[in-house]
Amino acid sequence: MDKSDFIQELYKKGCVKFLNDRLCIDLKIMVGYPNLVHYVTNIFKEKAETLEIDAIIGMSFFGIIYASYLSSKLNKPLCVIKTEKVLQREIADPHNVINRNKEGSRELNIIVVVNSIEKGFKLASFLNTIYKRIGKCNIVGIFTVCDNCIAKNKYLNLTDYYIFNIINAHD
Image (cartoon, rainbow, N blue to C red; front, side, top):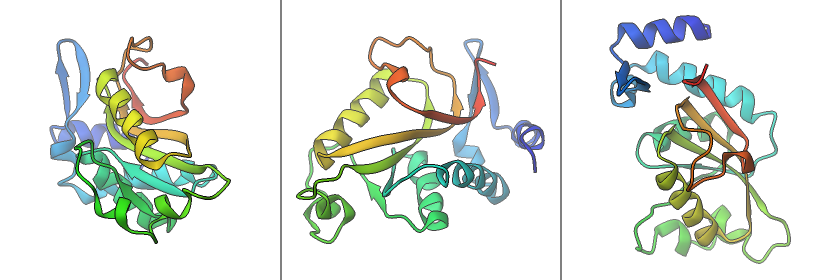
């Protein structure tokens, strides 16, 4: 499957929607089709292999699904960072990649997998949570299926990050 076939499949399955004249990909429908999920994670895998990464973080909800597949394909640890103020199991586990690096001298290189880059405030809050929970880390990439964000967002400066997307609604 190439990108054109992928977009056509999304359309046929009812995943492509237009809300307020903006392109949206309905990931709730998309996760029900393994061939589409595998296509996305294979594209993510190809790009991630060109980057030096130590771990993968998925943003709730659908970002975690794609991050999980990608983690398995790359054999890299998956870290689930929640935004709730609750002590998470991986934060307390001394063998987790997050905690092994706390006293190390090197920053942890991570990829963040998100649903879509649409709401800058939500993504900015999540990235701040990552920096608070992990400490020394470097976000080497933000991976998304569809980027339909306004480039100049008052909450998030996207030029600070490497953004990889399969579908760019600006094109």
